[in-house]
Image 1: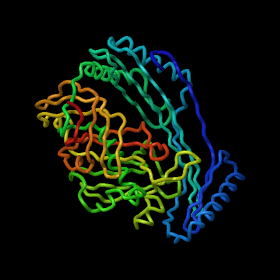
Image 2 (image 1 turned 120 degrees about the vertical axis):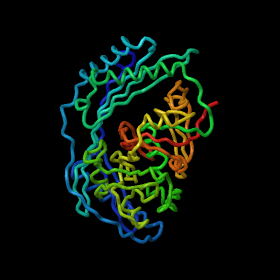
Image 3 (image 1 turned 135 degrees about the vertical axis):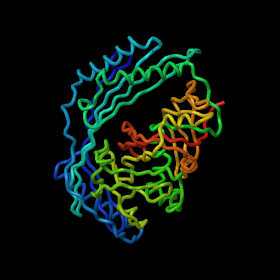
Image 4 (image 1 turned 180 degrees about the vertical axis):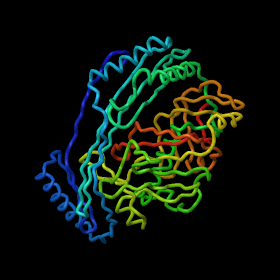
Length: 429
């Protein structure tokens, strides 16, 4: 809904079947948009023929692949989904509140979505599982103009498990978030440029999650390790402050199921937590069956494929830096001259842990007090250097479950963390 006008109401369904066969040291893969029993047998036979066809490139030693098995069914049972009319009514109520309470607002853009990803995975090794990821998402964009007439924008994301009927996005629940969002918008209308160079900052949990996923998580995926990631030679070595512990959770955090539960992956391997960094020391990687065999490590159940036509790749699930013991207010109070960074936009990172992220919302911090908002800028550096400079980690934990990862194919992921105080390079004047 844009400015109170419903501009899109879409529903998409994609289904199919795929098969992988390991034969003669090669993988064969095939897929189809049909998923009946006869078609499954056809794609399995085609996958076997494809594996045999690869043998023309020469004989290859067959790896001894780990073969953990999993049997079970995991599908979230929540409330009934909202109808399209109910969704439109909620969107209109949010827009009406913004129009009535935000005088400087020029435009609103609000989106609500349900996602249901369901797979039935069977393997010759004995795995037989139904795995499901269901999440609801609401994105709220407020747009205004600064003193020069240029647009400024802020965004709030509300996500949760299940359908939109399970998510508490009533106006009563959202009103505090909407009011805070408008306060940020007003501050950003009068924003000042950040100073460029190395700065002492507090990264809010949203940024800590992105840093964990993009800059440190990808270099700890075993296929990228085999491809030359810098982390390959760092196991058992210090890569962060001793305040930093980072884990890729399979399906449960502190006794509760996470938004992206992976009880078994698309190879039928049981999902287990991958402890990547423990007290600042690099301890392990996320792996598939093949990468685990090649590296001599355990398979973590991290081989995931998005669409039926995609082959499984080593992918993150729920990657997070664990909470520390500091209070956020105390962390900000400990900065003499620096920044509080709250939101990030697009970014990029590589297998050296070098990264650059857009900063879409941040504030100056002077003598421990939050000051003026800053204009959109960037933060960059080496994740290893940034995490090694961390001198405080907050005691809260926030999950960001509204995004996708784009490693060759999209993938539903979540990321989380506390606030982190560290040093990063910022763009600016």
